[in-house]
Amino acid sequence: MSEPFEILLVWSEVVLQVPAGVSAAKVLIDAGVPIDMGCEHGECGTCSTEYVEGDVIHKDTCLTEGTRQHEFCPCVSRARGRLVLPF
Ligand code: FES
Image (cartoon, rainbow, N blue to C red; front, side, top):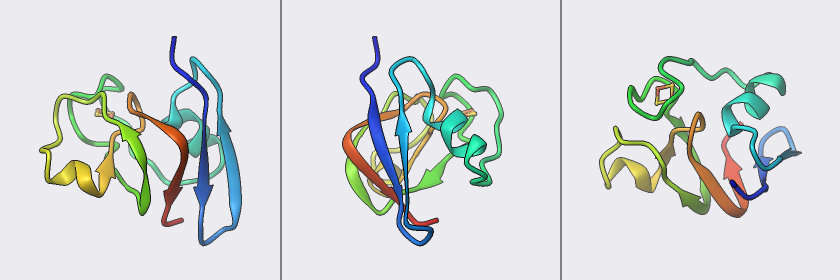
């Protein structure tokens, strides 16, 4: 079971809760953040989104280790604690 975590949209000054079992992509899209969706399985990279800081638990199979330092796939990936996004 996936753990809940929090997303801070730093420019909007909005904190979003990502419940266990719900994707970050769904929470972000519901909040109006423009995320393009593709496979929804961590395979295509279409949803790849920049983050500023946070302890991301990467669950995709498409991003390189280098890209993972500043982007994550919110369709499958999660975080520990608070993840900060530049929105
Ligand atoms: S939608 Fe394909 S990796 Fe997220």
